[in-house]
Length: 115
Image 1 (cartoon, rainbow, N blue to C red):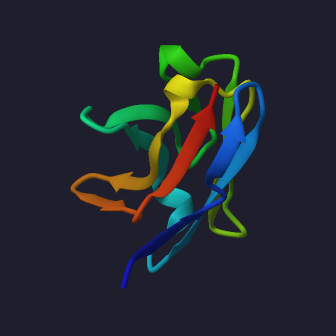
Image 2 (cartoon, rainbow, N blue to C red; image 1 turned 60 degrees about the horizontal axis):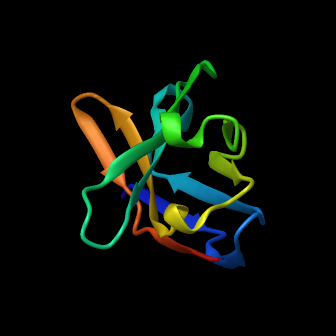
Image 3 (spheres, rainbow, N blue to C red; image 1 turned 135 degrees about the vertical axis):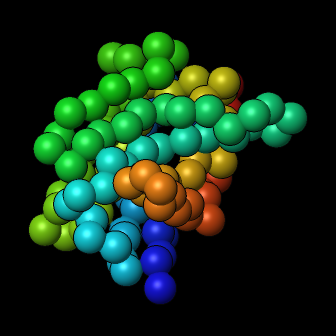
């Protein structure tokens, strides 16, 4: 059974930092492209950042320079370091594992940034 379990969300003030983690089980973690997505109330889910098994990354324009995605294949864990958080970063953040045609999602972790 595939499980993606996010942690690290919470309530912070604008300008502060959070580090999200996603622990994966039930998949060959190293061969999956992993990603972070987010969904704010009333909005569609959107890509935040992705990282391939080899470590290549891409970021949404709105987080470049503030967020860093990384992975530890030995620990089967995905990370998202979020710095300089803004109120508009408030959303539920989801972990995603993608190796077409298979795709899996975590349950999400809430990030709330107060002004």
